[in-house]
Length: 273
Image 1 (tube, one colour):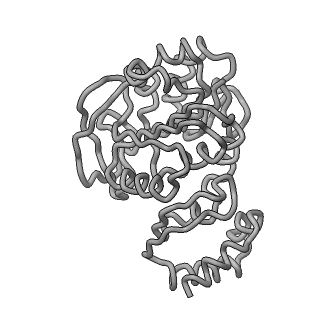
Image 2 (cartoon, one colour):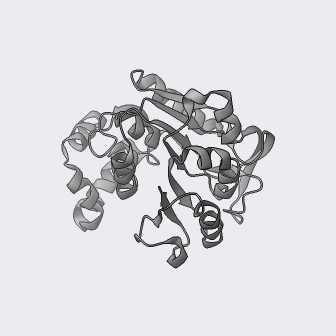
């Protein structure tokens, strides 16, 4: 039955996959089948729709369902896919499970460097790299910040979610473990290998966005890579705008198309060019 369900999912067009949640009867049937036959299962599968189409992905259900069916953050995923140019060097800062890194590589990036310190996510990304040997994805098991050296990383109740100790985001969420991690500034990283100067950087670091940018100011001033940043509070967004506006001519809130100066969304994405 599991294989039959996987085959049926592969036959659904992307448009229908994104609308199932809005069709009550079909939504309930889909939820029942997933709970009965795929709940708490792990398997390797090829994504068959969306911007990650063709990517082999290590699926853990139910958490990876939207990645598996190709609809994970679909609007942002499409925008990221459209932004990447063939031959670009791309950084994925806060790589999570490697989904966005896979999209970058599929779009023709020459190198995709994924920065991720969390053990569970590292395992997922390593598996993804092994499943896709032709894709130029490299994993760096470090946290990116404004300092070089060791730091404390807090793992949240969901083992794939975490943050640096100095990040205030998810302040009230339960921390189940603290681990030591290596931190590096992007300025330091680029100095070690100029061949890896990025054309594009995606940043999703659970409230540590300002620290990442502070540690990359020389890189940004000199090379001006395109940035796509998940912003986790209005205060962080204001600080980022103040730091980046002297360097970049265009900073737009992806969800509204407006300047960050007019933003009212607590969590959003900045597109910086």
